[in-house]
Length: 143
Image 1 (cartoon, one colour):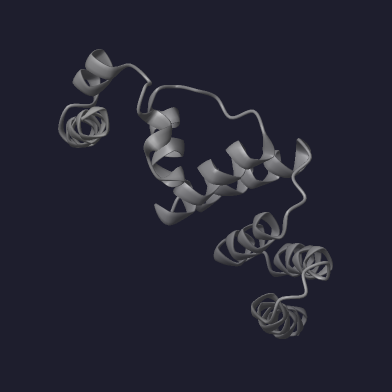
Image 2 (cartoon, one colour):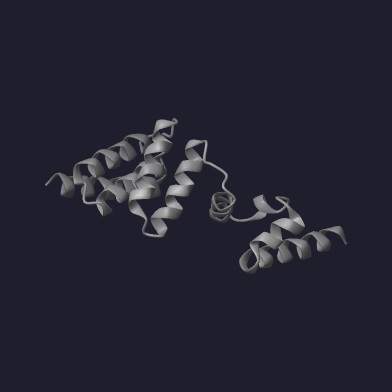
């Protein structure tokens, strides 16, 4: 019974969030915020004015901006993620892609190289394949 009530309230929160965000927070507060997918949590935190603090916060917000085509803003967020200690491969591949969108090939190549360096720790075939693709992209960027 309580699980059913939870699911109904969660569904109502998500529906309200789409149509009437202020009402959703008025009724539920932040109770259901972290039940949302990670990208939605980031979007909602930004909408609520919660400032990013961790490398992952800056990175996630940068991803949202990249998806919206706001590459200069995304670049600043990725750079801030690096400044506050971000050193995970996905950050650097997105940083490289952003530099490419902004026609900064040398910086894109540097970011991609950092991705390659960080990815060497991962032995999965998927990552090895991605590393090979990025190495080829680095060669193209360096001409």
